[in-house]
Length: 428
Image 1 (cartoon, rainbow, N blue to C red):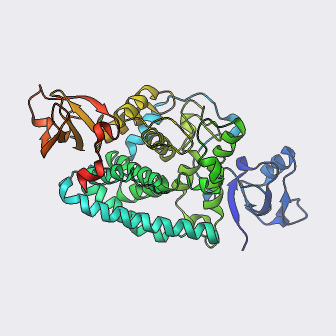
Image 2 (image 1 turned 180 degrees about the vertical axis):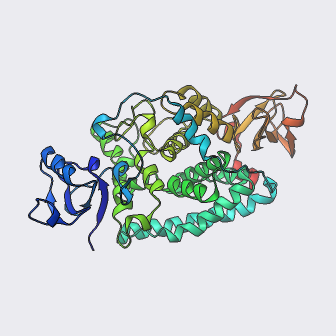
Image 3 (image 1 turned 90 degrees about the vertical axis):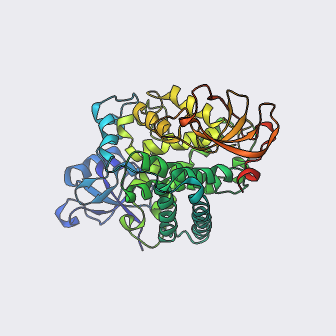
């Protein structure tokens, strides 16, 4: 079975092999059914006769996902040709209105976090098991079974819709696990939680969850020795590592069995292709400006960066930031690397002190945030663990700062493991 991608003419590059046109070959000057693109003149010649073509990715390179076509006559999303993309951020009313237009509903927490926690934990474990199986099958047989993930993703999204704090607490605890896929699932949960906050409908939240899980799938093609290398990487090693974006798109778009449209939602492939692009054009691999990055790609970029900041990376010797520090860093980067409005919405999603974060109160007591209060992000609900002398309390005590005296407040966020606190022992 041929592996073909339908692309607009703007997506063609030297080295690609055009297997089919959008019209019969006999209606064109071409003598053979198949064209190897060897020059820019070849591309311009095709442009005179076609709106889109089918590229055989077994006989040449794959088109950039920005130019894929999902149905006849329609580009995946409107964007200028690569040569015309500005490296500068584009601040337009459309960039602001695009995410506000996504808001279709408003969600309310319908289950207390303590009641939802074990349900969230079971949903997370099932998704982790299914993800292991799917990735193993992809590695062995080059087959990506998206159906095997859909049901378990639905379970996770259902839990997030009912009570997002429970699932974010679960992934916070899972940071201590030594699992290859822990970060992928964490990114998936944050993407879905962000989608819930933005008021997306459930199918769109599920798409975000799936895309978030697959952002770094291309790293499975990167040498393990490089992924685990401590300290700084060389220029060549950085380039190899950055290739995981193209590797991921290639893996997901060329797996055997189904057509492109049937395999994965286009939004998922766009998330994988653009999650390292940045609003000011400094990202990779295409150096796209903000307006050229699809909205789900912009969401993925913010979430992926937050998750990277707060988790220990295999190739980095730096200690991860506390969630509070990461939020402060994202705030500083708004309007530069990331769309300002989306950063502000993400901060509202996770809170300045996210669920699972360790904090110190004005009394000197130390606790863990177990719930973010929607309208009062600086005043979360905290499970107190240590007294003012930093000694363990004989019995943990819950305090809701949103309804407490104003003199009691969070004074700072703490690093993971501060004062020897083991979050797993606290909650499990």
